[in-house]
Amino acid sequence: MKHTLTLIPGDGIGPEITSVTIDVIKHTGVEIDWEIQEAGVTALEKFHDPLPQSVIDSIAKNKVALKGPLTTPIGKGFRSVNVALRKEFELYVNQRPAKTFKGIKSLYFDNIDLLIFRENLEEFYSGIEHYIDSSRSAAETIGIITRKGSERIIRYAFEYAKKFNRKKLVLVHKANILKYTGGLFLDIGKEVARDFPEVEFSDKIVDNMAMQMVMNPYQFDVIVTTNLFGDILSDLASGLVGGLGLAPGANIGDGIGIFEAVHGSAPDIAGQNIANPAAQILASVMMLEYIGETEAAKKIEKAVANVIEKGESVTRDINKENFVGTKEMGHAIIKELENLS
Ligand code: NAD
Image (cartoon, rainbow, N blue to C red; front, top):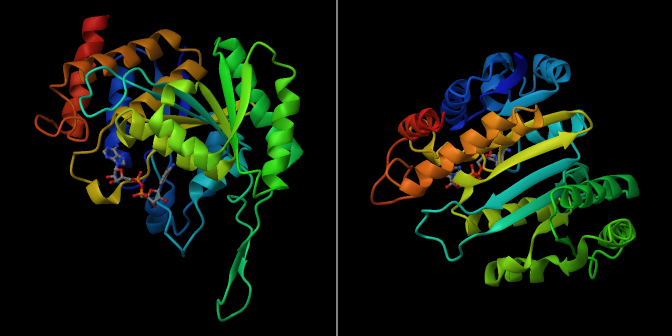
């Protein structure tokens, strides 16, 4: 079956890592017609709009998109296109696995297998903020947590844990200080947990969680948390398994999914053929699973794992002494794929 999917190459390192990803997918034999759409700074420069309507129309039609990272100006300029896309399609789940690949030498821990579910729409990403007066003497951000928004992400995480036989789920919050927003999220977690007696439930305050994840990550399995904490803890989790170059993510709503790396557009290394394409490729693995191309997904994951384990054709973030470029790592993954067929 031929699929028609949306591809957003993205900003910064986006075009380099997405073009490698498309090449890798092509070599599995899965047939995809890619509708290429520009967003972010690239679209702003070309069309004077960081999120043209054509991008929204294409995703609405195809229901699945592979997205490169998009730049968001810091402290000024247009609001995040990533956040806008999540809102537009009500992508309330942000699923971010962090799994160790064999062969990475710089790690403190082996065999990490963490899965973070981050609420993707509410709280401090609502974009409701302003200066309280024209002299900018103070600023206010409003973080809204709703029963509906909390329940659906927590229930999704529990259902996933049950389906894939994951034993433990920890809900991360700051309900000691954020008594209403954090308190509501925690209370709903306790309520939902009653429907899943097979999954061991606990909760942790976020600052303690950050320390515990660094000291002993093995005590955790599935993690569910609010938007900002999920954003931060998923970067922390990626650090436990070798960095952002290895961390994929999926934004999922009802019947629609946008798949991307956890990392951003990395302007410091853009255009130099040094970015690690693995996170983007692993996001495409999540996408292929989502569209039912399970065999191809498994093969790509195995090919990436083999290349990392051999350690000869990886980018410099993985092996500082002996490294290749983005494209060359892609070629090595394709070669592994061919050996697997
Ligand atoms: P970043 O994730 O782009 O980069 C952080 C560090 O990790 C940098 O040193 C970078 O070189 C390195 N890095 C990132 N990806 C890498 C890869 N594939 N291979 C090797 N090294 C890699 O974070 P940032 O610098 O804080 O943000 C840059 C821009 O990206 C900002 O505009 C930000 O808003 C945006 N951003 C977008 C997304 C997204 O599109 N989902 C996510 C995060 C940040």
